Image 1 (tube, rainbow, N blue to C red):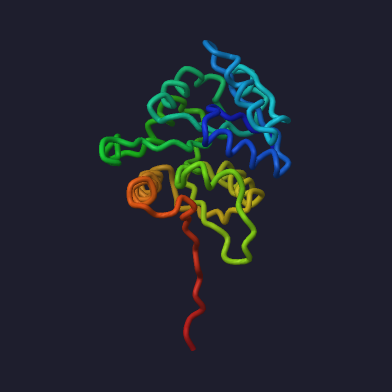
Image 2: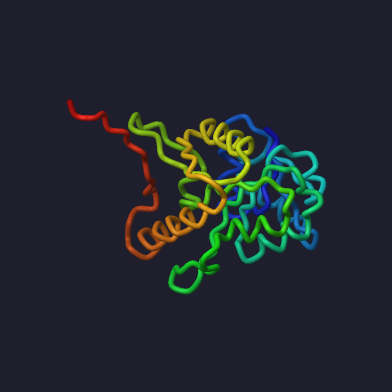
Length: 216
């Protein structure tokens, strides 16, 4: 799959490395005001050497999937500015609207819904927001239960495609429902942030879905 990644900080680079290792094609979206920074991010990690760099509209047009891996505070504006090019595209929202003291910055709606409002034709799926970047660069094969990665969205075909990518990367996908359910995933991410970033838990804390057989 051809994947355009908007954002090349810790999350964007971790996802790019995992996707490239799994055989997907990756293009970093360069900033109009600072195009060299995307190339610098690619060159900073040998795992990213096969990634391409392109400006936003070109990267989106040639992609099958777009991942928003930039701060929530600028994600909505990016989507609105490129709404026409994003029309019909599958878009993963990997952002979290984090407010003061790890609160939810939006309120009763999910940040994913706010982002989707900016590009009504985009097929938005909430995913990859649950954990920090230290968990997104590759899933270790430890012989136990696969780590869980929930997703939410209104487009079934888009969710199926994202679930396929998740399996490629070693995650167990869990469809939690429509895009409105992204609010629950964002709150779950806030719990992870409180546990790990301020609570002292190990950064590789992830959830897993265990299915118990009924007692006989």
